[in-house]
Image (cartoon, rainbow, N blue to C red; front, side, top):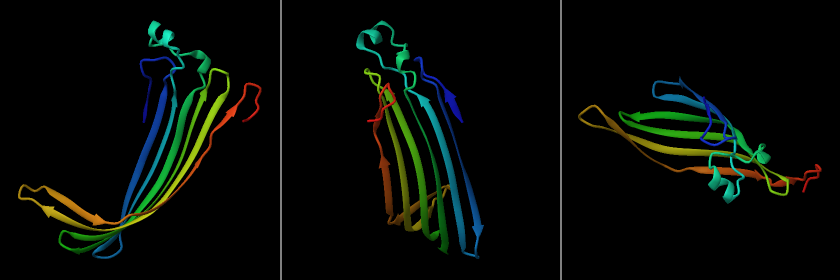
Length: 168
């Protein structure tokens, strides 16, 4: 977890995230690996100052824009089928899915609240060959060659809420 504020007023933020990795052997040279993750963030946006206000006190924030913020969350899953071909060689197939929701809202000088909700989805598959190169000192490097196919969708919206509640 992370939380705190910057040197300016109206700059609080909170974020949390985590992941879980699991491995299940299917056979002597075959295993299935899973990585699940989640992330959440909420942050205020300081600012909204005219140049003269900033020059007078750069630590302040315009309180008329106290609802300016950004935030969102993401969840995802990756599954890897790993087949050991020989010592230091593996053939892997990775499939993944991520779902992300983000939102930003800003109040402009006319009093309209601009909202920008966004949703992203990504789905992909990646077959690859991996070669482990061992060095004399006990360290190693993994060299991987593969392809990635991905399909991504985005739903990006932008609208204004007038002070009287009317949408535009």
